[in-house]
Every structure is written in structure tokens, then in C-alpha cells.
Image 1 (cartoon, helix red, strand yellow):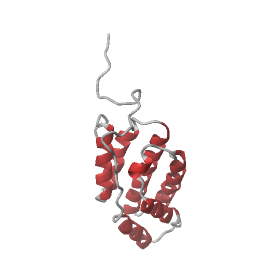
Image 2 (cartoon, rainbow, N blue to C red):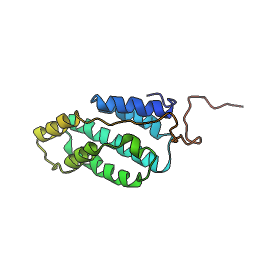
Image 3 (cartoon, helix red, strand yellow):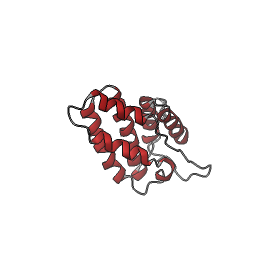
Amino acid sequence: MNASLPLQKSLKVGTLAFNSGHYWDAHEAWESAWRTLNGPDKALLQAYIMAAGALVLLEKRRPEPARRLASRFFERMKDGAGAALESALRCEALYETMQRVGDLSFNAFPLDCEAIHRDARRLRIPLQLTPDETLQPDPDRVLTHKKPRTS
């Protein structure tokens, strides 16, 4: 994913990928946006990145690492309280799904992973950014592909 994508485009691409069940692509697109944020918005988006990662791990039938990411999802959501992104990305069903992932046992049966993954494919994260969205990237953190000048 191109790290110089504008913030809102990265959010949209990630959300569309997630809603299509392409969790790795969502992870990558959201990470592009995450790099430019700070404070609660950065924490909230990191939680969503972790959720996408947990679902990728379920696809690979790796319940223990998925469970750990789900636990971290809730920690980062607490850190993201009050974020401007909160209303734009709010998805109660994602919280319920991450709770189910967090409740998996270390030796979860593949059918448990498959059931959660199948249900997750029905999730839809509504991205509700308005044209006058106040969310802006931190100018000190925006990444570019410019090479540093040498003397």
C-alpha cells in the first residue's frame, strides 16, 4: 500500500477491503492512514488494524495469536476513546466478533475459527466521513517517498 495515499482515501480503501472480506488488504490500507495520525485517532485505527489481523490469523487457523490480537484490540479501543474517527468507523458487531475471538481456547477447533470467520464476513464497517471532516493527519508524520538530499 502506498504510504502517501491521502488519509481519507486510505480509510476508504481499508474499509471497502474489510467489508469485502479482504482483511490483509484492509490492514495494509489502514496502516497507511495510521502512520499519519496521532493521539486517540491513532489508537482507534490501530485497534481496527488489529481486528483485521486477528481475522487473517483465523483464516490461517491460528487461534492463539488471533486471541492475543483481539485482547489488544480492546486495549487500543480504550486508548482511542473520544477519537474523531470513532463515529466514522463505529461497528458494534466488530466488538462482538473480537469478543468471540478473545474467548477462543488455546486449542480451538478449526470449526470454531471457521464459524467466527464466516460470521465476520457479514460485518460491515460504515465509513461516514463528511466533506468537512475535521480529521487531519499530523503534518510531522505524513510519509513521503522523497529521497533525502545529499550534500
